[in-house]
Image 1 (cartoon, rainbow, N blue to C red):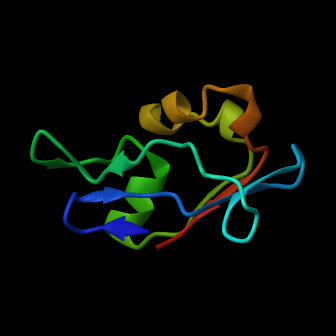
Image 2: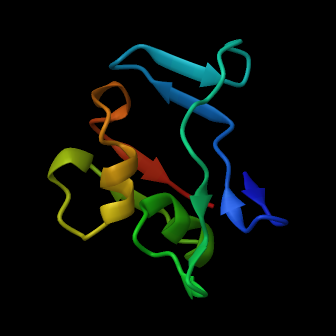
Amino acid sequence: MVDYDRNELVFQILKNQTLKIHAGGTSGQAVTLPPVPLEIDGLANLTNASSQAALTGEVINIPDVRSHRAGFSGTKNTMHKPAIVPNRCWLSR
């Protein structure tokens, strides 16, 4: 979800079937991922796959996030914890 007042993405639901993770939504568990800024130093944040999808409207299909080489350094930093690294990632606005 976009928080327009803070200009950032806030995760409402996190679901990973492979790792059996479900947070937010109807799960009763809080999503603990930090918000993703849509801008950094006044420039569009294209270092994170989720912010790029939100800003550009692109659907981003990353078959294996762990081996992805497109330079999404923000995504890799957010997903550094093994419990939230998906095998396949689909992001869209």
